[in-house]
Length: 302
Image 1: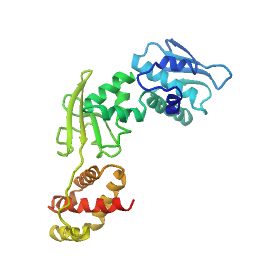
Image 2: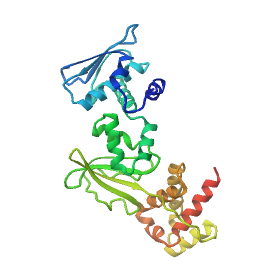
Image 3: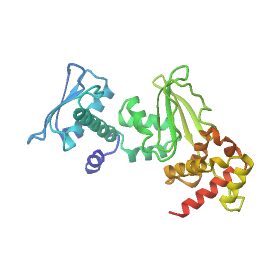
Image 4: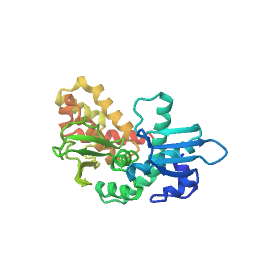
């Protein structure tokens, strides 16, 4: 729905959000009590609803609130008067669902997914991408970090850390490895060496990011993959792990099959690094040959 609004009005960041809001309601800023971020009155009536935004909130929060209130107006099943709390806490299920829907709408309205992918491709690195989205969307650092990695097809992790490099919050794209738990100490080697690592500061806050690169494997062993795997299992005494080996590879391929061949190979190899019982298989000199052969065969089935 957010993308439909932007498409109809031919908008892409940066654009005038207040002007957009005026198409859907009458906007006023005033101080609202009890931690209320915004109120929209008269949704679904014959006249334009009244959109109230808390004037005492920081600028980035006001902007997200305004996008959130536009969501309440646009989403068809949101009607009547809605009092909005961006962090809705313990409330009834129906209200919580409406607030979550409006939050997702706001994030997409301010940072459209297709636009994010294009911005990432135009950026030299993740820091430049992060800063570009912040500048053009007007969203907060927290909202930006929460959204910018989601639509990316390639595997990327970005972690907000404290001065001791403990995780405060972390986000990743769908194809990236699993995240460590909050409070874990991380460093440039936390996700192996098969990535481009960055460390940077934004508004005195420290971030680390890992953009995972593909593994461009040349097929030099021309035997079938089953023969190669049989040799690996024989030389590592891993026969009992055959089902696990095939399962890990199939799961990684299924998750990342839309990526390029080197990116799929890289994702499969990373999936095996988390399996301690398969370390001998991973470290075998023929393992990459097994991976590239399986990937080529699986891609031929499409």
